[in-house]
Image (cartoon, rainbow, N blue to C red; front, side, top):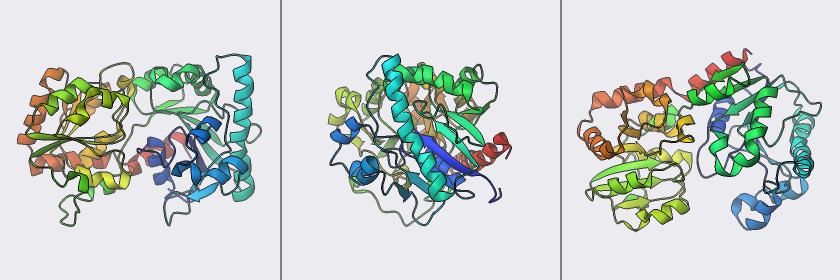
Length: 398
């Protein structure tokens, strides 16, 4: 790739400093190795501002949110090509029904957020750029005279099954896919959906930061995190948000194996608290961790799991964590929630009958070997973000 590539403006639903890694941020980091990438925050609403007034993620943005000052920051130290942009605070309108009132306030919010493009044009000389809207169809349906070289909608989940965003997001996403120049999707199920709305739809699945997740293999310089210093025996682990996608009965079944420790690395919600798992002695939940720390926890796992329910939401998911597990050389057992898992069938244990999940975990731990670790890492190497970005530039033909 050449440095003459146009600038990228990435507008995503996940914020760069959120509780877990995201496809949009991972792509942005890799893209920024060869061109400028402006990562626009998902806007905070007035409700967000008041509810989180003393939280760090609000406090460090307060000038930008209220007055539009200090709205630029570098996301990675030493990387001046990856620039975060914070829009002005917006109005909370999701509770409104579809109609004229919602449309009026939506237009008001959109104008405030669109101001980021206008300021980038002024402050950074933004002219020829590619605009990527990653799963946030509530803004930028129109470009108000500042037209990108290519507009791309990035479809990463089944929005109709995504609780909060489904209310208005379902119809807004349809309009965006139809109006944008092209769509990229992260799973084959999403391709079936989006390609009916826009024939210029392309499959670009998730990947892993291979060098990061593979880097601790065979390393003797590893500090054990304090939360897991007392763990003994085999560790069955999961990295990612412990949320409504999880089969909690399956996790309970794993926790019945008191000779194992179930290690959960990621934010937890009400469903986890209701499950009662947090009261079990052999269940260790360490909460959300920065992406850079995840390999340390993976290093202590004897098997990584993806215990997703099989439903309309999860059938559209190509999980980020899959290639991250593999890059770390960790055996993987997953429920059979998506057809995208088929390409990993020779490397990953895909379990259709959840009653056999525990046995599959036991089998993977017992049969692990250096040859299998090598096969996993080679699979992950082929699914790196570097490879995905090369595919991206072929898709946009620039």
